[in-house]
Image (cartoon, helix red, strand yellow):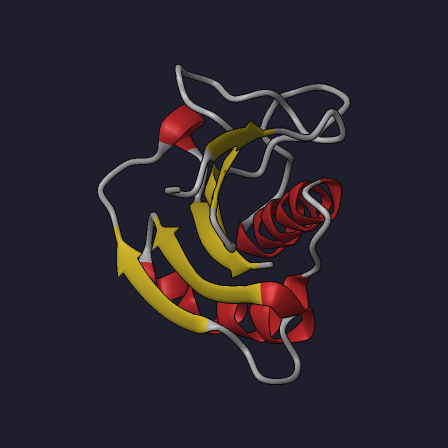
Length: 128
C-alpha cells in the first residue's frame, strides 16, 4: 500500500498566506513549506534586518517541526531564499547556531522578491 499524504500545521506560527499546507507528511518524510519571518502574534514581518528575520524564520520552522513531532536534528535539507546575497555571511552565522552539529544539506539562492517584501524564506525537508 502506498504511503498516505497527510497535511500538517502548527497553531504556534502564522497560518499559510496562500493555498498551501504549512507541512505535508509522506511516508517517513515531512516537507515544510517556505517560512517567512512573520511574528506569530501580529502575523506581520518582524522589524529589523536580516539577523532578526533569520531568527524569526528559524524559530517558526522549529515550532512547526516540533508540532509535527520532530526537531531540527531531523532536518535533511533546507532551501534558503535570500533577497540579497550580501546578507549571506550574517545569515550563515545565525543559521549555524540553529544547526551546530551535522547540519542538513542546503541550497541558498538569491531571489528578486519575496512575499511581503521580507528578506528571507526557508523551506525544509525532514525525516521521521
